[in-house]
Image (cartoon, rainbow, N blue to C red; front, side, top):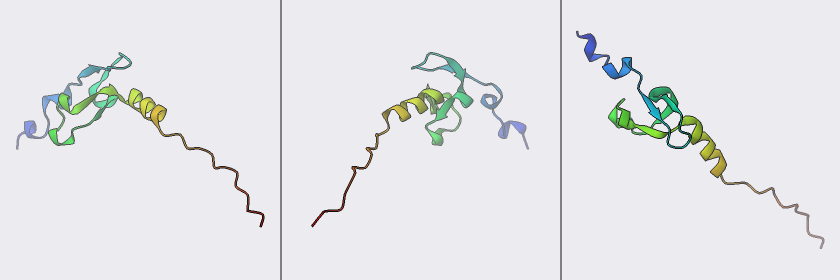
Amino acid sequence: MDVGDYFSLEHLLFKERKCRFCGQTKELIDGFYLIRKGRGNLPSSYSYECKLCTISRITKNRKKTKLPVEWQYPDW
């Protein structure tokens, strides 16, 4: 049983990436979403937009719900 079978060098070394939108450099695993789960933990599997920018983009572009129109029962 080899320890190298369970852990790779990428798990021990935290890589950093610069966000395309805010320009901050953050850790790859904690700061970015994994978008290609089938590829494992390769750096190319993570997005280029950090989690905070993704959350702000989603909430800003979320469809606004209109308040219901005040409805009255018809007067027959």
